[in-house]
Length: 333
Image (tube, rainbow, N blue to C red; front, side):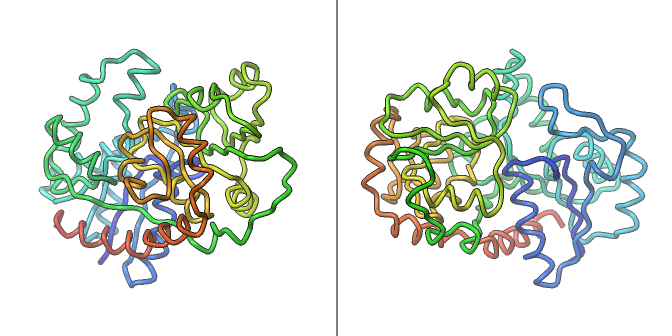
């Protein structure tokens, strides 16, 4: 098919949405699909006020319409509910063209925490945005059920994957300069990630945090004993995953958590709260410990077999994710 994907999330952003797109695009092209992307770097843009890493494009309506008409796509997929997403949605509605969307980010919860905007207001806007879509792709069953309870319709499961060559237990190094056991957390250092739930724990060994974000400097000052490593990518990140002893995931708001799969593929057991995301990815698989007592979960996860974590993660492939994406596109045609 000729596929057009519109996304307000795009590099240099580092998040699950961008990683998902960058991972499935090669898979789509390898199986013969022609993909056109509509992204903020193609337009004048400004930083989002409450999330400056996100660039908000402006003046997009006419250029976006022209690009769609040139591409003549067989299927249109809208990734995000930003300026580009709204522009493509409007074109599709005005022209009677079917399309699919995805629900990647729990903006109502994020905005309620950061800006005191009531979540019911944001959910109302999101219901309006997604209502004309012939299919709304969601990463987990828990997220599907939560959105259905809030009045969203045409929800369809779309899982995620991991690169098992990039994230591999073979990269483990016993001595990486920190006392063991090493408890690792990877992700954006922001309010919605609930990092203090991890940083406040009384754990032996070392706590390591990888990532950047608006709370980084404040948390560095508050937790001088924690090792904040900033942004680490590619081989260095893969080695760190493989060399840690437990992956601690304190977030209560992620829709999936790709870092969970990256950790598992590296042979690293997970400790997390029993909330959507971890419940769906880990569940009762035995490759992690889910508990409201995150400290006890982190200690118990030390006993999880690393080879079991790796074997479980291999069930999640980007090739399967891309095939599922193409199947779901068909509902929008």
